[in-house]
Amino acid sequence: MREAGAGAYSNAIVVGALEPGTPERLLIQTSLAHEDSKTNILHWWLV
Image 1 (cartoon, one colour):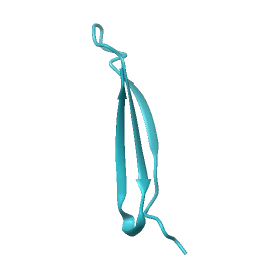
Image 2: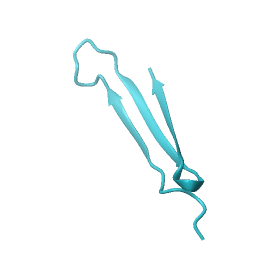
Image 3: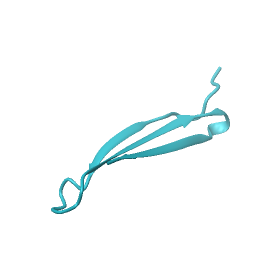
Image 4: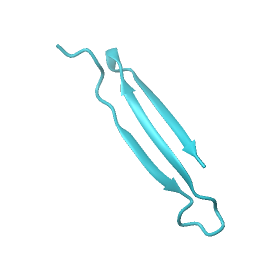
């Protein structure tokens, strides 16, 4: 029996790496599935 929603993911990307003069930052994105197909989405910026 399935108790969580549709699924979860994670992703990370360096932002600003291709723009001269722009500081590089790391964006981390994750999701966490819950019951009734509800999902929490989280974002972290590392500078």
